[in-house]
Amino acid sequence: MEDEDTIRKGLIFMVDWLKVNCVVAAEASDGEEGLEKIKEIRPDIVITDVKMPFKSGIQMLEESIALYGYEAIIISGYSEFEYAKKAITLNVTEYLLKPIDFGHLYQTIEKLTCKIEASQQLKKYIKSLDYKPTDLILDRQLLQGFKNKYVGKMLEQIKTCYNQKISLNDLSKKYGLSSTYLNAKFKTETNYTFNDFLNRYRVLQAVELLKQEKMMIYEIAKAVGFQDYKYFIQVFKKYIGCSPSKFLSTLDAQTTQST
Image: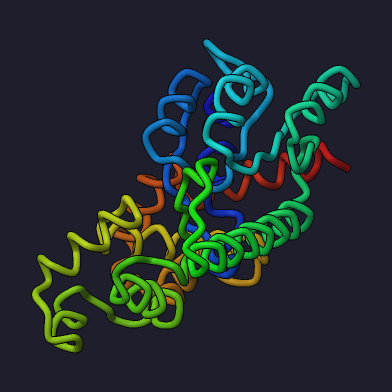
């Protein structure tokens, strides 16, 4: 169970979401919690495992995909045709088998973000004609579509300067706005505080370097912006659920199983 939890939490950090104009808004450990998160957040994309406690991924999709109109990707260790057939009837975009091919997953996310962007452009065009059909319910956003322009600027700073010293106070001085205001806007539109998102993004980059197995862990800590090695280990454990060395051994074991 510990390894499964590590892999589940690690999935969040195996894709550079900002590169595909996405933000991970939430995670859930079971289908009931997942359904509540979908109702609360109204996401653009949902990635779910077929097998989950309390409510399966299929059940969760059945109860929400038509209502909230998101794109869905199913991940499963079970290749039975019935699962795939059910996923097709729900208009699921992709059905991926474990162990996950992260290259394929990344390409799927890219394809979906392009599809959502095209849909948003169509909505804007329709609105410009003053035509407001009743079936256009959700007003979804991607990275470049945030309501507050400073949120996009802050995310760009994280994306380009994560390996340097970067703080909310620095950005407050740069933009001439209070740090309280910036953090509140950032939290409203991403569901994360600025520091939380920065640390998550740094851990994501650390995972990428760990997979390459070319650097020592203390070198990786510095390379992603952590000057304090112990603090890096603490932050990594907070988001992944285990130490970098344990996470690496779990990935190695998963790779061995797949071969």
